[in-house]
Image 1: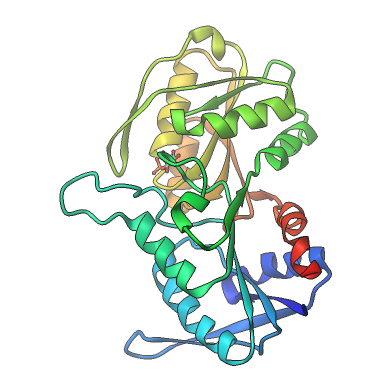
Image 2: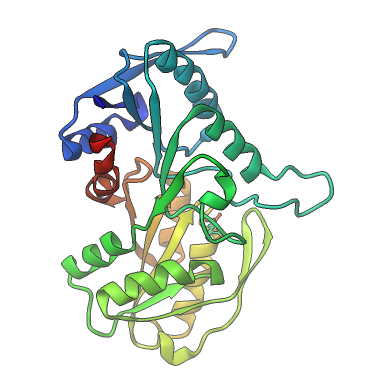
Length: 297
Ligand code: R5P
């Protein structure tokens, strides 16, 4: 089947990198916003298979625009639409935590599975379920982990032999363990209680896990920064020599970046899942490995 990669303006660099890694042509989807706020995407044609690159940070307009673009791709002859969303929004709301709340994870999965034939994401935030396919039902949905890329990046930076990798909560354990195994480093996780959107409390860890050592905090997401700031303060109060952080999805703004620095985090690095000034780790090679089978269909 003939395949093309397409992306929207905000993902053009990463979309082009993916197309290059797959040795496929690239097309840019143009976006228009009407004065009343309605959106109109214009797609650059459609091959029988279109791999659509769009990370779903700031997701609300992007989701609607994707649904509209799918209408155009299908009408122009696409038979297979593959969504590559390195960051997949709304996965954290995986149950109604209070009466009347939406289970956003389920609703967004329903929307995407109605429009696409396959979904690929990177370290989606899955807490109470083991795999994306449990959320997406009949539509094939899979995720890859950035752990190997993160481990290789830390190794290339010359992480010291006594480096300690710390996950700020239980949910980060899978990612932190995988990075630590790649690097051959010690790791542990803290216990987190979230008190509000910007307020978290962390339980204590054994001082010897960080005392006198370089600490790298590893988490899937940094949004308000509250989690990393609390983890950094804890590590520094226990005598960590230096604290850095690596996240898969950088969802934070400039003022949060300043607060992270004030909390003692010397460097924050992210994958290019979401376009961000902290991007240092490229995902295109690992995404391309998983998508190569699209050309064999
Ligand atoms: C949730 O538990 C995630 O793994 C992250 O720790 C969380 O989303 C980070 O959010 P924030 O930066 O707002 O603390």
